[in-house]
Image (cartoon, rainbow, N blue to C red):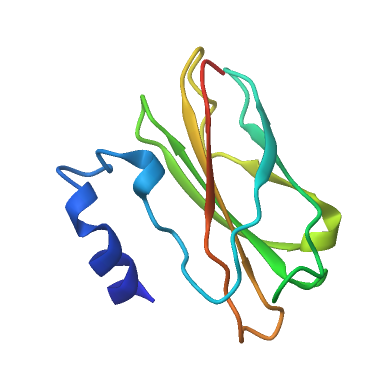
Length: 132
């Protein structure tokens, strides 16, 4: 868990937030990453909608795997980790941030999946959304 995260990412943290967001590893496992299809977010709003591609049945991926989302708002440093009860088959999850997103800011979205029984985890995918 925590030790694996630190050992994979320690070089990215010059201060509190990573220096290279796209290289940040949130999750690493047997399952391949599921690509993020789109992220819908607006400055001044707290809601972020994350949509992913339907790849259930490929490799270790099951329709019942649970989605995990991490959002990093680059300019403000706001970070929100979100363990959902949303299954892979839903193809979408909404994350509610603690405060409204900055106008015109950039957000980094990370998506990973965990088998419902906790036995298999996926690699994460990453998507940068600029100027929300």
